[in-house]
Length: 170
Ligand SMILES: Cc1cc2nc3c(=O)[nH]c(=O)nc-3n(C[C@H](O)[C@H](O)[C@H](O)COP(=O)(O)OP(=O)(O)OC[C@H]3O[C@@H](n4cnc5c(N)ncnc54)[C@H](O)[C@@H]3O)c2cc1C
Image (tube, rainbow, N blue to C red; front, top):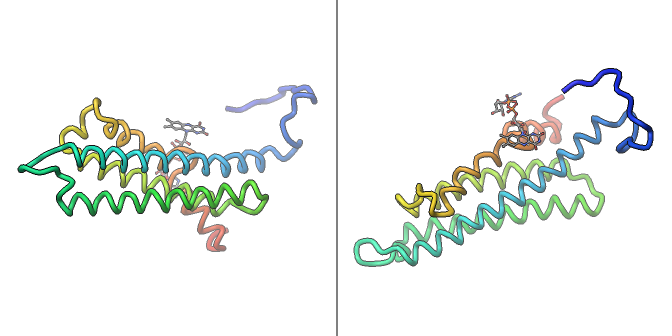
């Protein structure tokens, strides 16, 4: 979008004049924490659905949950959902306390969205063919997880931001 010769009454000014771009970037930084929280919810949902299904589904005469391969998958998913939660909460605590949070927001967004996709992939695998059916929540989670790596800045953009915060880029 571009605007030219548009007059906005002073009373309708949002924020500070001349600081629009900086304000816009801060909104993106804050939004990344929200996306990380969203991703954590999806990652945890994948764990919850997988635990439930693994206990219900019987294959070769026993619940699939009795297989250590399934248990280990779900244990890893739980670990990832946990670190994902720690990451966005750390960024959120910094935001509300007035501390710098740009890098932590990018770290949380990158970490949590990666985990959301990882957990959605594993949850779909644990559900087997049913994981592909819309009747099961994991089918939606698998599809929805991908946008978390794109919206509010792609994973590549988060890496660029983190590198810049580390003084690696101009
Ligand atoms: C459902 C949906 C909802 C959305 N909602 C919003 C919204 O509410 N607000 C909003 O502002 N935007 C929104 N977006 C837009 C979203 O933020 C952009 O799609 C996203 O930032 C990526 O930009 P792009 O699509 O132009 O991809 P591009 O910038 O064209 O990037 C394409 C690919 O190239 C990579 N790439 C680009 N530049 C570099 C580089 N320098 N180095 C390495 N890799 C690079 C990207 O990481 C990506 O993988 C939404 C998008 C979708 C699909």
